[in-house]
Image (cartoon, rainbow, N blue to C red; front, top):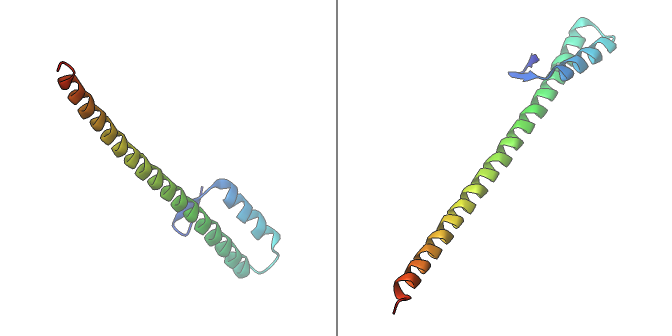
Length: 91
C-alpha cells in the first residue's frame, strides 16, 4: 500500500498513479504535482468510502438497537398479559 495524504492507498491505486505519471512526459516537478494531485484524489475518495460505510454501519446498529428495544417491550407486554391470564384463569 502506498501512503498518500495520511491514508494508505491500495496497491492498485498506487500502481495506476505510477502508470499515469510515467506516461506524462513533463518535467520532474510537474510529474510530482500530477502524482500529488492523483494521490490526494484517490485518498479523498477512499476517505469518503470509509465514512459512508461507517455511517451505514451506525445506521444499521441504531436500527438494530431500536428493533431490539421494540422486541423487548413486546415480550414484556406479552409476559405481563400472560401472567395476568394465568392468575385470573382459575376464577
